[in-house]
Image (cartoon, rainbow, N blue to C red):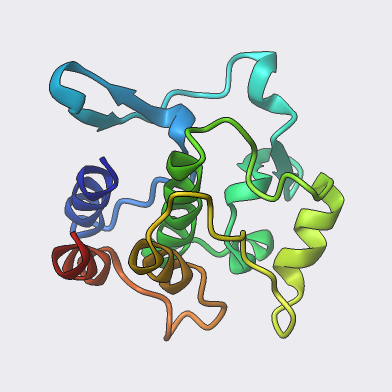
Length: 159
């Protein structure tokens, strides 16, 4: 399922499309576990508490947002960050929020601590090779963060 999402995002990135809100709540799972990534708006109060208002009007997902995106910078690399968090969610069966031990304010503080950033811990049952891919998605330095093409290459060697 993670590979399907990553492949779809690689395709969209080729057209310079930036999703800005990749998460399990945006994944539609169909017959034979076919995954489609949606971009449904945040219309219900269920998820609004998980969003952060940036620059007065744009709501962004606090626990999925890349470090640079708190400054309004978005790219394929910020989507890769959110994809890494989505993979983490999938291995927890989406039963808990990322950084379950932190408040929203602490998540923001952690994301902005570029020298002391603490990524989400490896979920139970997550293979080390997959967690290493997640860590490549959370590299603070954009030059070291993977692209979707690179993530898809990593999947080929770990699956």
